Length: 40
Picture 1 (cartoon, helix red, strand yellow):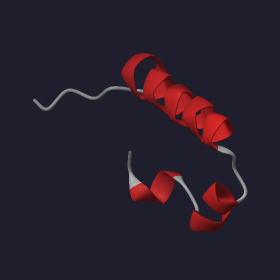
Picture 2 (cartoon, one colour):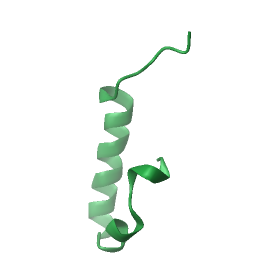
Picture 3 (cartoon, rainbow, N blue to C red):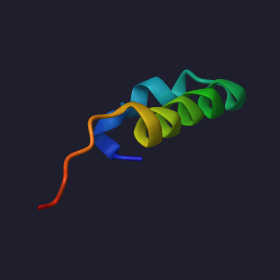
Picture 4 (cartoon, rainbow, N blue to C red):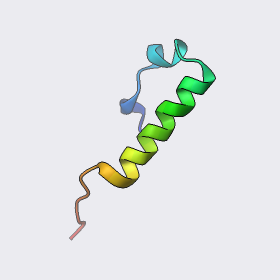
């Protein structure tokens, strides 16, 4: 995960299960929903 996608203070308030859900959501967004640009 990119460090700029999260704030340290936000993670201090999360439980382990909440953090795992946030990480799973980010990975899903990164793999399926973000705008992908060609390198050419």
